[in-house]
Image (tube, helix red, strand yellow):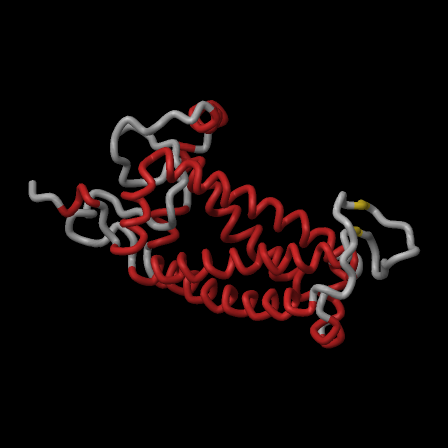
Length: 240
């Protein structure tokens, strides 16, 4: 089987895809909830950022104090109230969806079967060849029923590193939560340090989503989206 070069939605089945959905119902529902909340995150995050487009390190930072990074965005102070509300609401919806997904992945073979790479695949030559194919926008030669090692490593990093990190840094910026669990803020070096880390993790997630959409489009956007909605691709519905 030829290896794929796209980054599809979560949870592709193996050779039994004709009998069972390519993506389980839990994976499909949590995928679209996460996608919707991510759009809300980006919109509200931009609104929050343009209210104060400067990044600091440590506990405090504000107008008139030295900044770590000045973003090339004009100040629009006082216009982020709705953005903060939407950001907060989206965060809790995303966290709940993420918990359902993780519990499902631990209670079923999903993580082991679809996300964890095999030791035999963890070689720099193999990984670099797959990355090079992606950089050249090479379309897969045939339909693939399993993730390659680069896809698996990417999803593991997103699910188990980037998403937890952006949640924890977001909580560390909350005065109410930091007052109850001060070690959370202290662990990141202060409120402003947490905000700076939060910003760069968000950029990494936005980059991931852009690559994800590009690779799905390259592999066949309509078929991939259909699989994430119905659980099956068009090819799987055709009689043999």
